[in-house]
Length: 328
Ligand code: GLU
Picture 1 (cartoon, protein in one colour):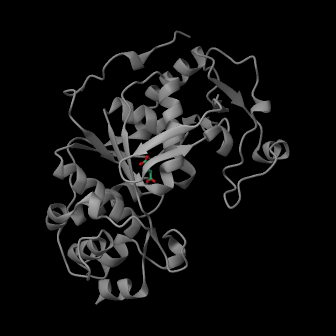
Picture 2 (picture 1 turned 90 degrees about the vertical axis):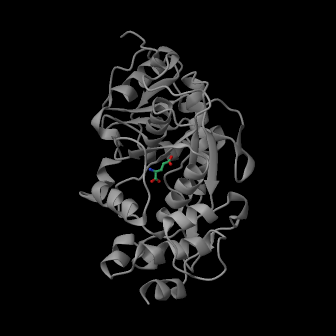
């Protein structure tokens, strides 16, 4: 198959050189909760204050976890909060060709290979799975084949990226420089899945590149992914890279990342109980260093008052009092 190096040419909607562009990228794997809302609101406020373009992208390739209707609900939740964006919505599952083209380009460079080993088989070879995260068993370089294909010819198998053994520095706009070595934390990670779909890491890089995204603002749980994505930019020879801003997370009182176990913190839960968006934003404003008490506020007032330099560096905790105030 011909190596279609789509990466060397500008995208059709290429913008002026210094235009900054970000994206809101919800995954319709569940309803948006207060933690997601805070990240999206901050991303939107930074973008609108700095006159960045905002793109909306639905990241629906994790198909086993995608919930029917969650895409529409996420859009409605964000509009209800008062957020907006600048163009049509890109839904990842609608067009897989750009991801296949990227795989072909990587195969032509012998930087990917099919791998049908199960996680259990890999764990037998890997010395120690990462504690607490069963998804991140580092893939040992000893299992990487020397004779790798030069075409992407089997979309129904997992494919892994050849990960060089080097440290990546992410110059994060909020966290400062962070050094991450994917070869040690994950090894050759999967970028194409046997469901005939790209994995998250590849999809994000391909989409950020083709949508001209040069400002990525998201939760700090994705900081490690920024290093993996940097390796993919290298492998695809994409020179325009995004600047990263990784934000602190919202946690429950047990210190764990906000999730179902902390009760119902979905935006729809509060909206269905008559809570106005100004209350949600009032709480997010307090969590974002804008106020020292809870006070209703709309998205526009949040935007005007928001400053990244005033954002508390620590993760914030969602408390019972927060929940009671929202519902009061
Ligand atoms: N869709 C991802 C999420 O909802 C965000 C991915 C990203 O910002 O790179 O967690």
